[in-house]
Length: 94
Image 1 (tube, rainbow, N blue to C red):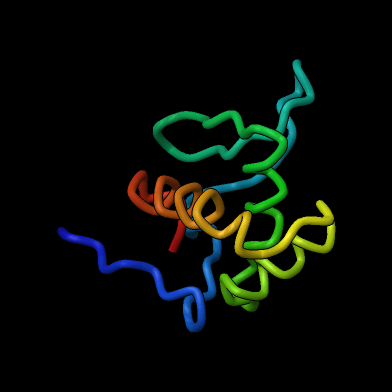
Image 2 (cartoon, rainbow, N blue to C red; image 1 turned 90 degrees about the horizontal axis):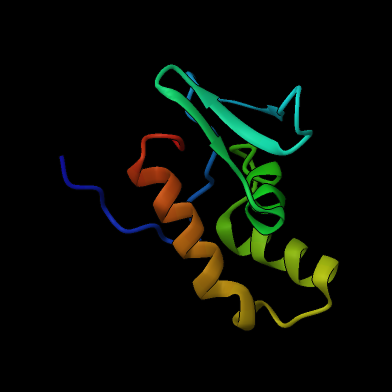
């Protein structure tokens, strides 16, 4: 199945139904748990995933992150979209 590209103006990402976002009990690192295993998240990926509630569009996620990191949204855009695309390709985002 080929995935269509994400549209920052209209796509509102959320975790797939079978995925849980939590902290690892041993290391305290943020992870995504899914039936096939777990994915450890970097600090940046965790910040992105926390905003994927199915309500915020990608451009709103960019605005929130830009304010949090005091950076222009354009500077974050490619990295945020690449992170979301990678999670989506692995079936972790709906």
